[in-house]
Amino acid sequence: MSHASSYPMASNATGESQVPILELEHVTKRFGGLPAVEGLSFAMRRGEVLGMIGPNGAGKSTAISLIGGALAPTEGVVRFQGRPITRLSPHQRAQLGIARTFQVTQPFTQLDIRDNVIVGALFGGHVRSRKEAAQRADAVLERVGLAGKAHLKGDELTVADRKRLEMARALATHPEVLLLDEVMAGLTPREVGNAVELIREINQSGVTVLIVEHVMQAITGVSDRILVLHHGRKIAEDAPDAVLSDPKVVEAYLGERYARQRAAEQSRRALEGHENATQPSAPDDIAKDSQI
Figure 1 (cartoon, rainbow, N blue to C red):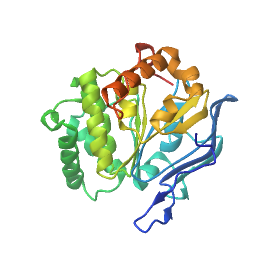
Figure 2 (figure 1 turned 45 degrees about the horizontal axis):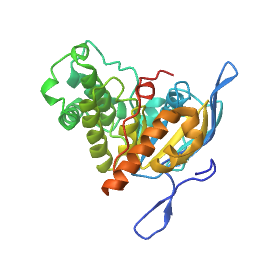
Figure 3 (figure 1 turned 120 degrees about the horizontal axis):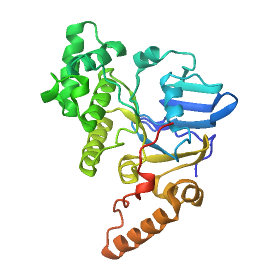
Figure 4 (figure 1 turned 90 degrees about the vertical axis):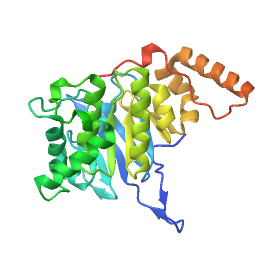
C-alpha cells in the first residue's frame, strides 16, 4: 500500500518526473474540534482517475470541498500543479482548472438547461463573451447527451439527467481536474453503465478525474487507483485489486460478504480463463447513497 508521504509522479515523453497535478499534504478539517478529515495526504498524476471510497461519514465529500474551495482546511496544504491554492476561493480554483459536482443536485430551476450550463462556462472564466459561453454550453450538452433537452427547466429533469447536468456545468468551466461527488447515486444499473462510459470519455479527452462513489462495480471499472477513507483518515491507497483485498478495507467498509463474493467471482473467472474480469456488484448495504 502507498504511504501518506508517497506521491505518484507523472512522467513526460523523456521519462522525466513531473509535479503532480493535484496534491494534498497533511490536510485536516475540524468542525467544533472534531476532525472530519485528518492528516490526509495524496497526489494525482495528470490524466489518471482516482477513486475515493469509504463508509458514510468517512470524510469523502469534505475532502472534495477542501479541494474545490468550498471549505478551508484547519491545517495542511492543497496544491494544484505545484502551486499552493489553500487560500483561493472556489471561483479562483475554477479559473485555474478545478471543477466539481455535488451529491445533491441543485440546478437553477428557473433557468433552462442550456442557461444552467452557460452559467458554468462563465464561472470558469475561460470564455470571453456570452456568445462563446453559449457555444461551449451547446458542445458540452451534446457531449453528455442532454442536447435534446436543452430547453427544459432544471426541475423538469429525471435524477439521471440532473446528474448529467451537474457534470455538464462542471465540464463547461473547461477543467483540468474534475471532482465527481457520487454522480451515480440513485441511478439504475443501465444509467450507471452510461455514466461510467461518459467518465471514461471525459478522462480520455485529457481531464484528470477524482471520483467519490459507493457503486463498487463502477468505481473499480473506471479507476486507476483507489483511496479509502475511514473516520477522516486514509487507510489504503493502491490499485483497485490491492485495495479491495486489503483486510483493513474489508473490515472498515466492504464487509466479509463482499469479500466472499469477490473471492468466489475471481475463482469462477479464473476457471473460465478470464483473469482480467470486472469485479462483482457490491451488496445493497454499500451501494446506498451517502450524505456527509
